[in-house]
Length: 457
View 1 (cartoon, rainbow, N blue to C red):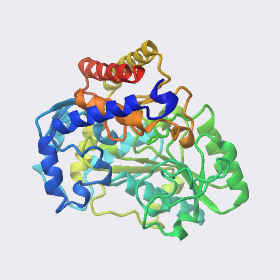
View 2 (view 1 turned 45 degrees about the horizontal axis):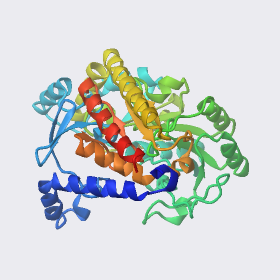
View 3 (view 1 turned 45 degrees about the vertical axis):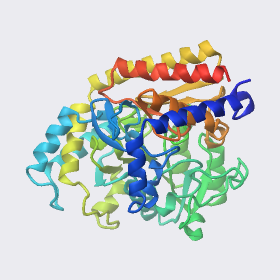
View 4 (view 1 turned 135 degrees about the vertical axis):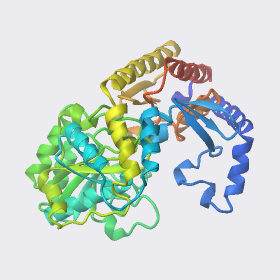
């Protein structure tokens, strides 16, 4: 009997324990830094999402498709900084752009010409005319929510259950709700996602399942004239990778607009990684607003918000002040220009597609050879193993995936020289333009190790 048949089987638990011991034995220096940092870094890390079991991994440097931890171990980096690392590490075009900009000043709180070049390229790729910059995905989605409210004069927003859009109050609702708090599937409850989110803010957010137009229609009918806009990942992340069903995005835009409600795509993770114009370009569905960050900066922190002339005109005429001392920072704009013009090229996307196909096909062959009830989901450079047989169409389906299988996969990959994001069930890989067939082969060998262990459990 496998772990997927009977939950966390004893065999899988023993395998995880063995791999955890190997993990810790390979990282004495990381362990020292974890202990040392706890006296000055809350929780012993620089972000709560870096705290993983059995411990956080401390990194020294990266080059090309590889990263190196402080213990000197080399990994093929399929983590990619949660989607930032599409260019890989120290890409020559990014290095040259940043080196040149550093020598000419990195901050003026005034625009530089690179900002126009970047905005032109984003407008071409996403089909939206007007842009502004910010410093993180959180800032971009925050401005999007504010703009939808400013444009409509309404306070309420819609979001998808299980979607993460950053850590500002309005979207810290039903991000990863516990099953006993979620309410019925046809009418999910709005649940604060962490401490410090006011109940009054939670009360302004209506939650719907992904891929469910009927649920959206029910909320719109129940709250006529109250909802300003809906924000969603058009291809859902943080729950593996969940594709929109055919017609969902176009139907959503039509339905929302019929009620005077705006649509914002959070393409912080999908922008550039799934294709040159994100899901917007692939789907042909252009929202009122789109939020970008992560990959567009080539490894430097930046974000962008693009929209229609009507909505972004509220910034232009001063109705809404979109501000930030570091918005359009010269260093970030130089890196983003290089990313968009020299890195994320047609040739790069052809290479990514080659690697995506090799990786997905190889994993599917391993799954079939071991007769395991898993399947592979990919979207351009992003992808995951869904540790169940049936397709996953929303967050509640995702909850049925075995946590232990995701964790075991992460441990096996790490111990086999492949770096993945922790919490392997949630989000798995990013392929960079500098990855090679050798990196894919290393990944596949580790999947084989996991499959052998699970099939024999």
